Amino acid sequence: MKRIKFSIVLDHKQDVFREIEIDGNNTLLQLHQIIEQSFGLNQGEMAAFYFTDEEWNQEEEIPLVSMNDSVAEMTKIKIQNVFESLDSKMLYINDFLLFWRFMITTEEISETDSDNKAKEVLKFGELPLDAPNIQFVADN
Image 1 (cartoon, one colour):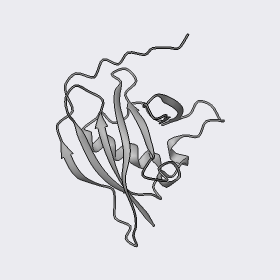
Image 2 (cartoon, helix red, strand yellow):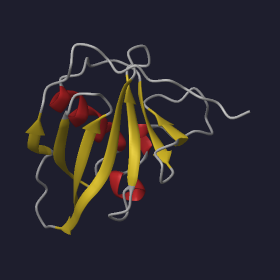
Image 3 (cartoon, rainbow, N blue to C red):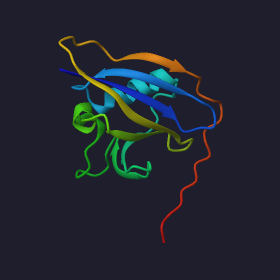
């Protein structure tokens, strides 16, 4: 069984990050839920994970709830299937009105026999009162 440790950094002028360990057999929905709990985000907001390139540009979306049958949602994708190596990383967006954006990188992948629940192993900073001001720039 794979156990994966992530570094999750809030994209904000303040330094806010967490390290979280979770079983790779869990789904992205469970990773979404532990991120919500760990950072103190409002539960029930729309959210999505995004594949990225090396410069953290958003690519393919994995939404919390899909409005299109051809797009897989968080409940259908195991964590270990998208975080396969230490090079794996994704963006996580929570609350599409406030737009909390997090950068997730894989810190460690280990084999274990235990089925420990997800846990926060390091916490630094608190969620700011103001969401970041993210600018979208489209290519012409």
